[in-house]
Length: 330
Image 1 (cartoon, helix red, strand yellow):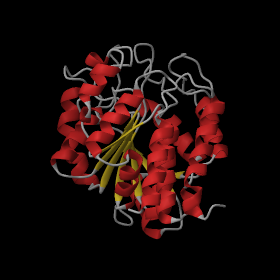
Image 2 (cartoon, one colour; image 1 turned 120 degrees about the vertical axis):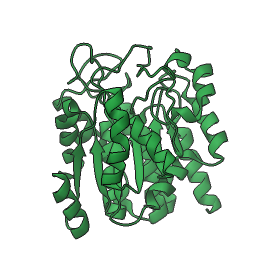
Image 3 (cartoon, one colour; image 1 turned 90 degrees about the horizontal axis):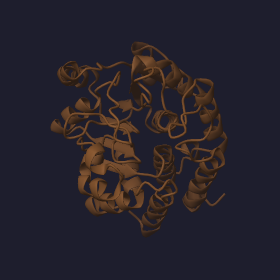
Image 4 (cartoon, rainbow, N blue to C red; image 1 turned 135 degrees about the horizontal axis):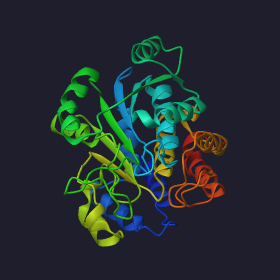
């Protein structure tokens, strides 16, 4: 890696880990970088770009946010970021991306993916589109919502899909007691697909895994449990145990995904991969249309994690500004 690329990667890490939400994410970033020994965003971008062309990538996101009221209530942090990553993988590697998500959130996820420019198709048709290369497509798959069934299904899913990589963003993982906790330590397990078991199995098989998280209760935070316990409110209770190969921390998980695609664009020189403020606004407005909530406030609006929409648009703009020198400066 060139010195210039390393500098850009470090700037991306720093920007997305400004702790505007007061969650302690700067400490999580410090711990993850000490473990990774390189830029978090840069390592994730390298892993995504290393997959073979036309390979299958399993992507998961989506948080059932108020399951004790309804399992159809989802959070707006996660789906937009996943859509940005999938779009970049399809453009850069012609990847066959399969989004694993609860049936109750599938309709909203499909709408966000469509707003990112992706055709949501049945699995066989999406695979054909990947092979053909003339259509940007993606498919959705469901997964069991009970512990025993989720544990048993993991090997079969990996056998059937044969993914080259697994990617997770803003996906809650179980704690040491097997409970899926919110940031406030509330049991979030009702109606939640046990997808973290798939990541556990992938790690056993040495299938690369990348995870993005912003609070300590997500898949991948098992890499840095001490930092979560020491610096996150309720950290001892909420810390997820599932690990990953490459962890990206961010103040908002969507920001982590936007930074990864910025790093991918810088490495490839392909400006198409960049996220834009206009697309961010489209994705978050579509999330509103589909009833995804700004979870800390419990309301359907374009703000994410209690942070105003305008801030999210500015962060996306800044990410592009950071990598502009690698893209010819224009």
